[in-house]
Image 1 (cartoon, helix red, strand yellow):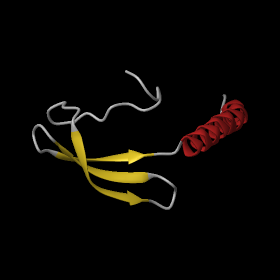
Image 2 (cartoon, rainbow, N blue to C red):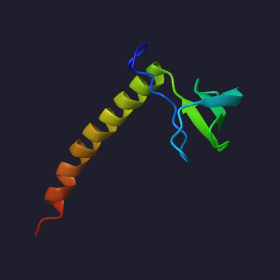
Image 3 (cartoon, rainbow, N blue to C red):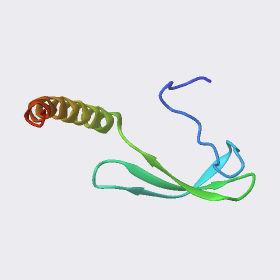
Length: 83
């Protein structure tokens, strides 16, 4: 596979074919792009959502902050309910 290592091929969920055509593209408010695709092999239709890397990094940072907050809040409550 050559080109961008972060970009994967779009496989048809129905037949597994890699040759697809984009029927419609729409930008979303969060910066992602929703594409309606048609498989050139089986003519199956499916959607893909492309999320910018910056949005993925922001989501990762938010998830890490939530995990640390859960850990922080979970410790005192565990001690309170011990008998």
